[in-house]
Amino acid sequence: METANLDEILRKLVAGEELMLVDLAMTKVGRSHIIRILVDRRGRVTISQCARLSKKIKNTIDADMLLNGTDYRLEVSSPGVGRLLHTEVDWNRTIDRKLRVELDDDVIIDWLEHYDAGVLTFRSGREVPVDAVRKALEVLE
Image 1 (cartoon, helix red, strand yellow):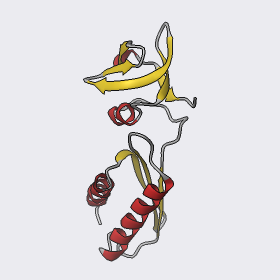
Image 2: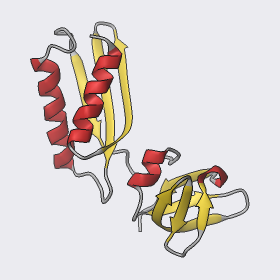
Image 3: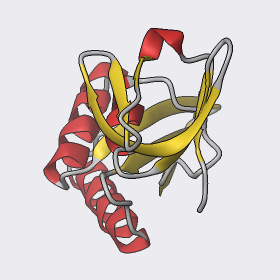
């Protein structure tokens, strides 16, 4: 099985569950594979959604012999609050969440209301281009 084909299949399974793929890492360790998938959605992804996706992925890999019977470990989880935000998926998944955004000369702690065309819009009405963001992460209330 080519990694590119497995990658495409995994992406389709994630999208089929109406989740956002935050990160996908496939590593070969000896004769085994480790597949780590981070997913999220607006609102928050639940443990049961991760478990359902994990089961679908496992069933697909096993039924279609995608890893040719090779041993593998599958990890499906959410990215967690402390993960740095920097991709378009990150901005879209954290809409309606409180963020801490560091700029060159300022720090914004506010709820992200909207993301479009490279611009973050916060509840306060402040707009920030993502190019100006030095560091950003979600914070707990």
